[in-house]
Length: 386
Image (cartoon, rainbow, N blue to C red; front, side, top):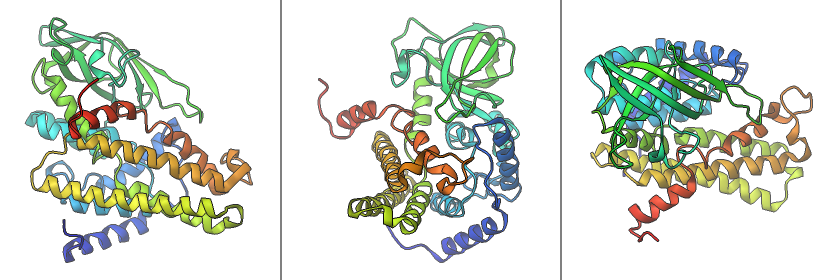
């Protein structure tokens, strides 16, 4: 792996930095997991799209810049270091889109990708069910064949921002007679269709975007099936590889968090002893290690290697790093950590506690870390199953 950036990559970084410095909102937007904040974030996403920054690695015909994966990582670094808003289009751009590029038809790509990148059509992920979270193959939701399409029935849960989104995607069982990992098909479906009920799930921080989805005989046309009928498991694994590995949590996010932690420690180091100083240093080192590991992964991908089960190592590392980093921040803040953005004495507008609450979900979503460790043991280390 070449650790030096090329002249063109450095020029790309400067272009990113200049645009972001000129356009990132000076005042923080409301949380993207509230109805007001979701609307504010979509306005920002459209500015990104109009300037060609919404999906930089995509082909130009879909609104991208055809940037390399290295340039995409550079953009992500600059994006988060500039303090730009979190992306509410992430479930579409970073998870569904790679799946469409690999398995989608030309008609699907033409119909879906540009509106997705601009935020005109927003997407939720409908994977988990009440008794099928990390064990995705245990899902019970069904799809039965009808003229021109399918009828979907079942329940999906833990769907991020489904309360606000237009569409969702997920797996449904189309052939119950087949084995667990077979007889599944990957569908896209509208969240405002007849027969769909979206019900919010309360969160610790009070935000309202999290939801569960109920489907009762919902019609979906054949045009909204991704991949082959009954072969959805392989398609879904491509999505989960993006979620656990490269796409969903780029290093730029954690580098920016580590930089904010260093700044917090400098401002309040009188509250922090040597042990916390060491934890701050560890947070910076972990973020840098994750950065270079990701660049190594990109190098492999550019050589047409598959990430495969290695994405599980990525997921365990970044999710646990995120929790540790926020725990260190809260230890520095001390008793004031419980104040939210409405309190005049809140440090950094109470965002460290909000970030900590979100980080706690990291070891759970995208497949629990316990499941990821099993995958690492069996598929990466070659250890036998018990």
